[in-house]
Image (cartoon, rainbow, N blue to C red; front, side):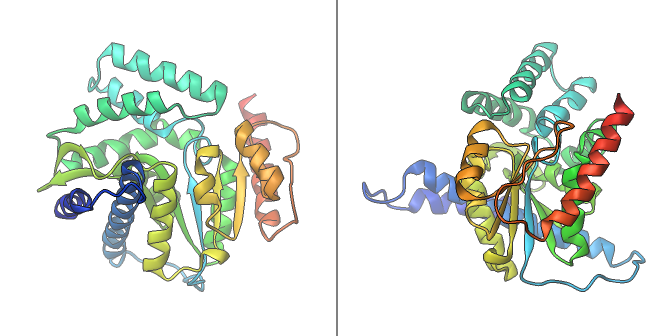
Amino acid sequence: MGPIGQGLQDQLARIPRSPFGPSEEELRANLAGEASADAALSLHDAELALAETDETGPEVPRDLTAAAFFDVDNTMVQGASIVHFARGLAARKYFKTSDLVDVAWKQVKFRVTGRENSSDMVSGKEKALAFIAGRPTAELAALGEEIYDEIIADKIWPGTRALAQMHLDAGQQVWLVTATPVELAQVIAKRLGLTGALGTVAESVDGTFTGRLVGDILHGLGKAHAVRTLAIREGLNLKRCTAYSDSHNDVPMLSLVGTAVAINPDSDLREVAKNRGWEIRDFRTGRKAAKIGVPTALALGAAGGAVAAAVTRRRDH
């Protein structure tokens, strides 16, 4: 990933600036998306190579041109996945107490408002890069495995998980799309039995993080570019694909596909979904999820997910 990352960075530096062309922010978003697709497919191929030695059951007939793309934070996982990972790292003394208090406060704001904050993202990016600089990429992945089992496994939304399984059962690829580092996002995807993950790519050389990002955090336009790039490389028909998210920031990604679904949406995304006739599924409360627009083939899988979520909530209470 290191040589690829550096090559893309050099490519960005060589692009001539034009007042009528894309902004530097857009170029970085495109770079982040392309790097994310490269990393996702590379990690996916590595997983397939390992799986070839394992015994598997009957293979589900594959639907080669359709896929589902799931945002992670507040969509697949309750809260922010990167903060959950930070909690696990703090328990292992990788962070100072002051850093843990800071990420805890950001988690509170995220859970209360349901929205990502750009200044929080910048601050988080700087601290994360400072933490991983000079560390082996394998170390981050190993820590991710441990922390997923300890913290994140119990925070998966059953309803969203059921939707993902519905796509898998239909023979479709299922990808996570998140600002979380791709190595950690891949851990979540692997644990859930999904195809893989598109995430933020941190540059590495010879298996060691340099402390720089390839492009920028995978966010907004970057997510859309990552999905588009992966679709081209995998031969997917985006009109037959489905995307799920809780955040208004993911409207670019949701707008790319034939079926967009708002999961646990923030107020802005809820409004967009109503205006565009997108489905809305809310697993945060006991009330029946709102259904906007024409019912689709998602209905059966989502109904099963809602039941699972209700059972889990009653158990918790």
